[in-house]
Every structure is written in structure tokens, then in C-alpha cells.
Image: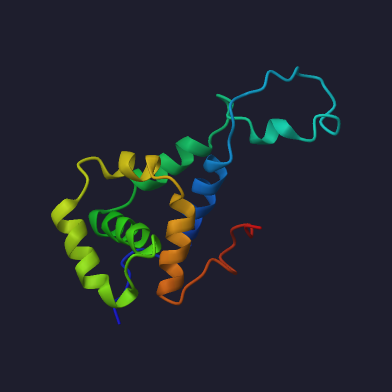
Length: 137
């Protein structure tokens, strides 16, 4: 069976950050000093300039070596459900042949990145359970 060159812990961290970024919404203009309980804690989901989620994800992706970024792209492609783990060599050949010119930007703009990566890990029999990352409900 094929092996990943990126650690499960790294993938799980990226999944958590990608999902946190996916749920962000434009600021609603809630006034500072309003009661968070009355606001139903909406400010947590607002994409504020002070929120470091996007930068943390970008820095993590930029720190990956070529093999790790290739595996991450492969996991995302595998997670789309069009292929199986038995197709991993073909997926990786596709990544090598069609590698995005700017892989970090490609991954950052990929809709459902966290979901695709989780599904890709599952195809390998891996999960983020016990990874130290908060569970995704």
C-alpha cells in the first residue's frame, strides 16, 4: 500500500485551519462592547483583520516541502471521491504532470479543502481522531 510523505498530524492541522476559514463570514458591524450572549457569539465567525486563521494556514502550507505539498494535493484529489487509494500512483502522476504553478494559492482557494483532505486520509485508513486538533462536529 502507498505511504504518505506528509504526517497525519500536519494534515489534521491543515484540515482544522481550512474548516475554520471556510466558516468565516464578512464582518456584520456588531458594535464592540455588545453582549456576546445577545449576539449569539457571531463575532467568532467574522473574518476580521485581526484573525490569524488564514495566515496560519498559508504559513503552514508554505513550510511544506515539495513531497508534502504533492501528497496534500493528491489527498485533496483523492478526497473528491472520483478515485480510490488503489489509484494513488495515478493520482500522484497526475499531480506531477498537472502540478499547479502556485500550489499554496491553489490549495487556499480550493472549496471544501478540509473535507477533501479528511476523505483522502480516510481512504488511507487514517483519521484526525486523537490528533490533538479539536473534533469537527
